[in-house]
Image (cartoon, rainbow, N blue to C red; front, side, top):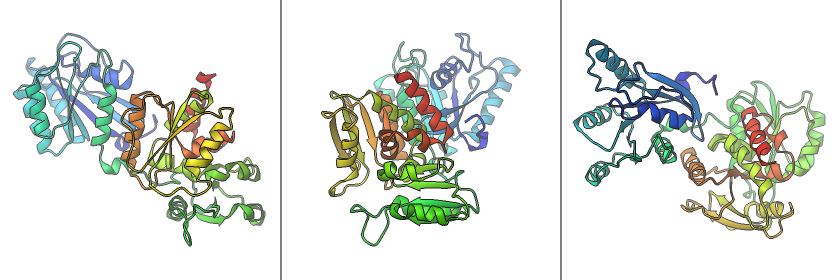
Length: 412
């Protein structure tokens, strides 16, 4: 994360009057004392930058600026000028105010709108006072996103994160591909694709097709086999594959056939990486160890379909979870774009690969779960955990493996 160049980060500028709580907001969002906080107006003299990984959005750069109403002579003008230079590289602007709304904030909002910079109005210090209804109504009528929070009390920070996700440009959200950084050019990739009742007649399922195309896009080449020809395929390869990818449903039978030195994962885990946040999914899988007969798991499918016999979401995953010593584990299901607002009573959400969703929708669901402290994982990650091979399946992704080990260690 620290090695991600600034130019590849979503840059979020924090603007407003002196003493509006901009530095406190930066510290609350990052969870660190990145900026000096004081009741003395004008404490922030120069822009303060803080690079961080804002899960589940990804790498961002938060920029705390000096108050734009600084009137301390020549020095104040220099501070304001430095802050205004941040405008040119801001992807999302946060206009921070207390409970008030004056021509100053209105001019700032107009400036960002004219420059076509997405912005969010942040009413800080909600523990002291809240904005008048007339102010909120005016912003709502003009479709200006706003949030009321307390940086000092760290209240409603999750709502701000969700708005930032909503405002993030599409080109930032779009993943580079399923096999980015794990399919070396000119090397073979082994794709193990069972043909079962859920496979569309005469076709392959979408993640398998995407993996084939992505392999070619990375100037690698792929060998596509069914599980019953896997051993023969490996024996006939002159050089071992750089990566083996399997359907998650056959993790248990395929894993012993793949030599340990070959990086090994599943299509669904690749989808979790491409469509969501694999580190959060990996951390969420650790919650499976805490499930008991009084727990409730919500299984979410992106597409609506008639379940077939041995359906992955309605039959197999519930069976594998219950086989861990929890025969009375409660399972709920949702399909399509239906996703509950209230997750009370849910101990874990397990999501499909979401091949029919865009990344924004998946990340929004992940944030929704995080706000209510409900662990979130996906099919492939959960299945690998159930078969006892999650650490091996995450080995190609060190950050996700570290996240899993960190949370797993805390559950023991």
